Length: 164
Image 1 (spheres, one colour):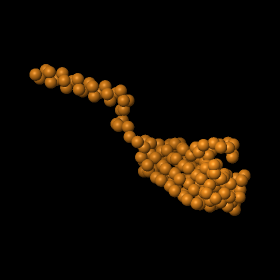
Image 2 (tube, one colour):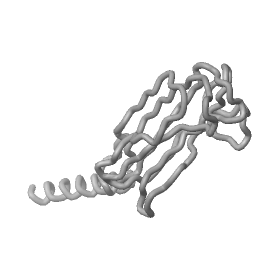
Image 3 (cartoon, one colour):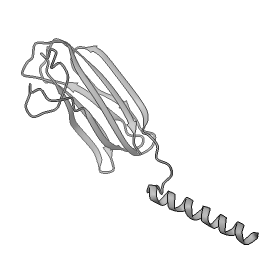
Image 4 (cartoon, one colour):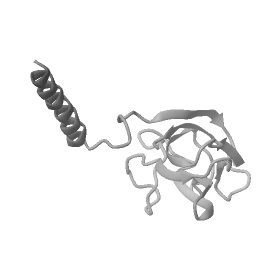
């Protein structure tokens, strides 16, 4: 009887170990990303100086999803609003990554931001960035178009998720 119990126990241990290896998980269960910050800026006019989006408490990999839309068209067709990110990773301070460009005179069906070398093209929104951010160092954003006195309003929506 003890021999049969030992064989059954051995089979169970081998089955659990094989299932764990087949899933490829060695660091624990797979979990969904955790939202660490949400940002909503509605009907803003003018530039936004460098502003802290979040400061990570642990170094890790983060996905930042951003959507911008032109609410009221402005007066600077040659100068799109550019959304920039700044952060620190293992290499040091990373500066001025352009995430999105938004036409200051955009109207539907093209009143959303995109990033493309061809300004004014009908490309889909692409405001998603994955970064490594160092604990205690702020991740910041800013918006500018280099054209003082630009009129019009825009909105920004962002979600920051911790990936690992």
